[in-house]
Image (cartoon, rainbow, N blue to C red; front, side, top):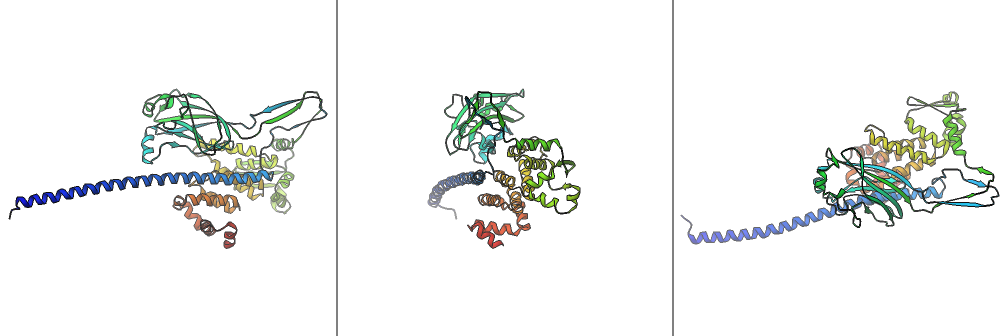
Length: 464
């Protein structure tokens, strides 16, 4: 039987009502989706702040230990030249130097796949691209690129407080030469929070964009080659501190040099004179003096009095350390010069950046930690712990934690636990983490106690 016109009209009216209800429901769902997206964005921002907090906590732990080392006169700045004592001067001059605390450096930042930057940032819901943090002296910086230029396009961010620094920004041209963009920046950063600086950051005279170009214009310019942008930052950084004051006599008086022992000991070792010990490291033979080894490390005193073969032949084979790391260790034993250790780590990091197969700064620091613990050189071990506290990453924290347990490095172990606590969702998925728990049950137990808020002393008592 055919549906009547009245029935059809009633059905149309009912369907129209359903359409109105569906549209109303759709608008409500769209509103809920926008709220969900807002919550997701807030979660991402929270995760980013938690990441920054974890990094800062690790740096704070390192700074606390560094301060303790300075208070105990185990660490700190050493004079580069021996001071001069004047005998009965009749007149004096004074030289005040603000440069002595200044650290200089040049840093290359390359962004490959530059045409994908804007899309990649949108996918990750980020406004700008950020580099890893780097230390210039003891001050931390990182570089940023913002294709929209809202907070400057290519810039650097200072993370510390009460620091003065100068910077220049260069961009690599098609010719291969680096061309300076903008004027030299001269900054006094007296703010505990992060702040961005660059040629086109708000308040500067330069037009927004690298050389005034938008991101899209930059892609077609000479500054992008093979879909890559390469920038260079030249930094001069002076931490907060008083100037160095040097007073001298203008008269011709007798000058007595002091504190040349470190230089003399280093020269003795490098000359190879009077050496009576050989270290065979990899394929290299390194000579040393048994008396100095005994004086600086109790391990060697016990070894040379033990009656073992090494105490007679004075030939010691080193199998658990690279030649570079062991030479750095011996250099420290002779000179007590921490600056040489820092210079070696810096050279290793540069070599690793140029050679994909090269040893990293972290790996070298771990070797120095292991050898200083093995031979009982506390000052060097503490320095290595502090450096590793600043190098913690999701992919590397398990390796560093395992070594901290082996080397009885309590401070480093605690820093690792803090880092894992703030990145637990990422770390627990790593195979390295699972292997660590399987090989050392005590780590899992102590980590669980730490996450539960149990103090270290009580946690150690439970494990024992």
